[in-house]
Length: 82
Image 1: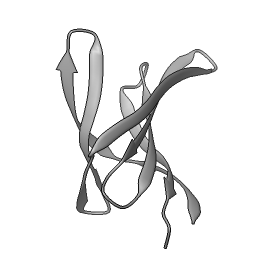
Image 2 (image 1 turned 135 degrees about the vertical axis):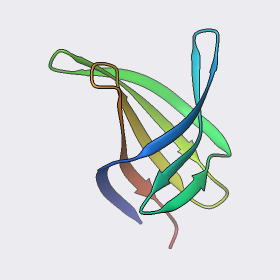
Image 3 (image 1 turned 120 degrees about the vertical axis):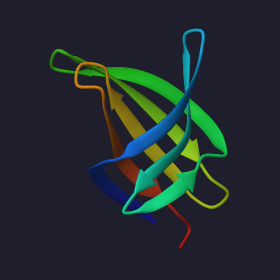
């Protein structure tokens, strides 16, 4: 099942040189541990540079976005089998 969310989330990240790696995110008072970063890509929304992180835990896939101008994280989408 695919679901568009587009809600603000808090994200715990690791910085290693010039690489940002999401480790977990908090949404609706629940912590979601990230097991794997599957893909990272960037795009523009007007003058804002946005980084998209396709991540997964042991069950679901998520698409997170990070706006480099506002420094805000969003949960864009969820894909689950259920």
